[in-house]
Length: 227
Image (cartoon, rainbow, N blue to C red; front, side, top):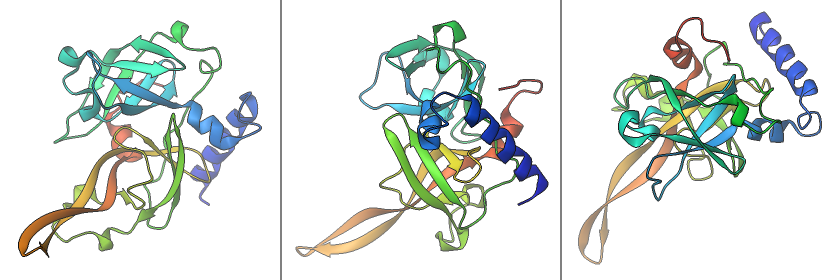
C-alpha cells in the first residue's frame, strides 16, 4: 500500500470511529452517503448521488439534466431538499455534477459526514462497493482488455456485475479504503444478431458499467472547494 493510500485509509478509519453508525458497520456508514436525486417534476425513475460533506452532493450530470430546467432535488432520510448547482458537466464531456443543499436541513447524523476521493485511479481486479440508499453491491474493476475494441479509451474505467450494481450517479467505493473511486455513468453493451422463429432480431446485452474515475472528478471540482 502506498503512503498516499495508507494516509487516506487512516483518515477514513478515523472518521469511521468518530461516526455513530460506522463503528458497528462500515458498509452502513457508506450507505449513509447515498442519496436519491429527483428532477422537478419527479420522473418515473430515480437517479443517485453521493453526499460528500459540507452540504455537497456529487452525481452524474445526465441525472440532473439541464438544472435550470429540471430543478434537481436531493432526497435523503425522507426529505426532498432543493439544491443549488455548484458546477454542471455534460454526458458528452465530464459526466459529473456538483450540487449543494442547506446543511441545516440535513438529518443530524449526516451533518458530520465527510467523504474523500481516492487519490489513485482504479486498477483491474480492485475490489469495490457500489452504494445506493437501498443497499450495497460488491463488484470489481474490470480489465479494459475485455471490452469491445470500439469502446473509446475514455470509457475504460468499468466494473462488472452490471445487473446487481447501482445505476447512474451511484458511488463506487474502494472496498479496503472506503474512499470514493468514481460515479456510475452508463452501461456498455453490445448488439447481438440472433435468429428467432425465422426472423433476424437485434438484441443488446450488457458487458460492463462505466464510472467516472476519481481523478476526473477531482479535476472537475472547483479549486478551493472542500468536502
